Image: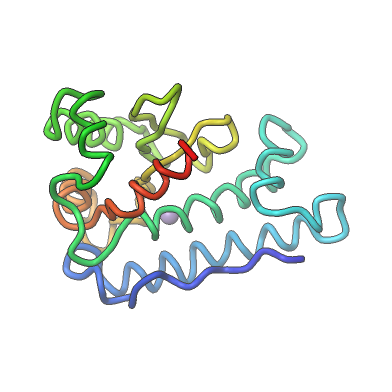
Length: 201
Ligand code: MN
């Protein structure tokens, strides 16, 4: 089997003006697609050729000889999860079961936003900020470059890409403005709730 590029879960202009169609054209059509092409080239003819994306990630993490495969596979997975973490007319106060858990674990929605934004802002260079579930508690973490919670047995609920390619066309160097738009207008709370429910299955 080979790894395929999933379609975006919305039209490429559906997140405008917060994320433009040009950003999504490049980010999904070029960046995400390149990770897919690269991982397929790198696993071809190897013992990983028939593995799922998740298995490729788990089998190559912390292996210096396979860092190229890990980076490309993890970036494929992270981007697919990121597209789903957003929706048109999303963002704002959390809904559903996760809203109660946010209040219980962070104190308030505002404290949650503050911690999540801070993680995104302080990820030096390229990486990701995540809402994750660890020991049944919500936590905010950040990962560098391609690193991903699923490589470390941690359950992600939401993510935001803080690589410059995610926001440069729309916000130039203003990562904070991009993160504000993510919280206020883009988060897909139904996706976060579905991930929470599945992890408690
Ligand atoms: Mn990206």
